Length: 449
Image (cartoon, rainbow, N blue to C red; front, side):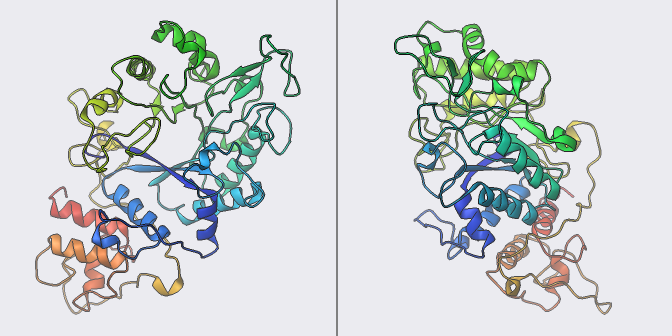
């Protein structure tokens, strides 16, 4: 993904799983024939940390998306952020735990605090957007959640999606539609209705600059919305849907905007026509986005790869590629200040003309699940010269050292072949052995530094 210009990865996850981690419960992960042998035996949190480190090494940032209260492949159908088991308080406290755990590593750049709040006024559960403090008022819940997260890490971006319905002028959520008459509500995609921002904007006080609004938008193969009934164009999509549901937020500079989901099947027809229209609108207006999705097994959109989860759908990637951040000569731009994006990209510092330091910034290691598994801190010695990165002490720094370092951080081995391997493994001399050392060692081997 990094080599192909994707610099920001949105990872769906459940409140239930994060809550389990926070309680010291680490469910086992399902494995299959494609699993890397390095991952064998890892639990879900260890796998998440492995993915986290992989992203860090290639200059990618992460946004965790709370996709559902419970761990359920179809959990996104559930309309709100709480249920009888995983309450609003558990949802917030779980995100607080996640924030605390990664607060010293900006690989975790953003939290999409709830995927696609939705529901209609006549349904038992409905996410609404108004000025109340009702349990199901998404605007109110999002404010409380965001402030508690930002009290822990004020540098995170808080991504807030829309809802499904919003009352038309003169009505509120108590309005009842009359049979065979025009609805008293505006409807849009789940999570795609941000009309309420004009009347009831999210207020994060001193943290307001960390707020990002994030609608979702799809084409006719996901659902034949009314704006697809005619021979639509980019202009009619803007007039009939985009402008009043979310584009005005960008146009009026109310807050940053990120299209959190868009994508779909290649049909040679209206679905591709819609994808190209939205893509070009985002390019022309410099709107950020995360494409749905990489995985092949998304039922109503497909993925960027086929069912081996490795081979890219080049035709679909050709739709996405022009909307990825890149220089005029085609170099993809990452969001990290030190680590270039992938094998051929550049860092954001390089893009803006700055100098990339050879010394990586120090950060604290990712906490490990139990105290007994902590990475030992190197001890000082003046008796021998240490070649940084040469963890097996063969007087060479190469891929063998990199493999050993990775296995040590992943707790696949308890010690290095030589007693002083710990000091060689602390490549940046910050007193900790963590993913930053892996990144630096890889750059040394590749002669980037």
